[in-house]
Image 1 (cartoon, rainbow, N blue to C red):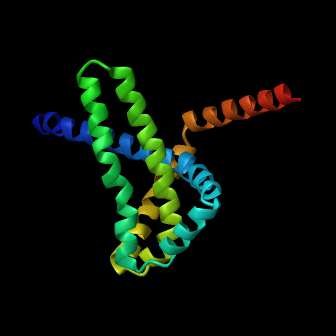
Image 2: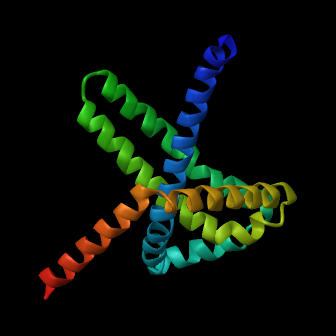
Length: 168
């Protein structure tokens, strides 16, 4: 009995961690590719094509640095947003965090698409990436089998049908 009571917080933390991981994977699944494609369209502009070519040609460790850059650049912005929340500007702070997350994800997704060949030449990165992909697919498989996922797919399909009818 005592053991069960002692394990309860660990189970709660594990469940919370699994929930956060699932949300992260779902955000990546739904946001990563469309945002990457949006930035790819923007990067077709004349000056940006040159930058993309340079990023593609980077050696592996330079690719790691460039890939990590958006995270380092967005951290002060997110801290400023948390400061705004602490000062009572909750809506502004939350808006800044959401915009920073979306913009950061878009940029990181595009940078990953450009630097992935160089990054995969680093053995440690290839191992971590393979492990992440296995974990991601396992979580997605469980999520897709859930009742909530199936309901969300039905709702999404209904909204698409309504949107198509409205556009006609």
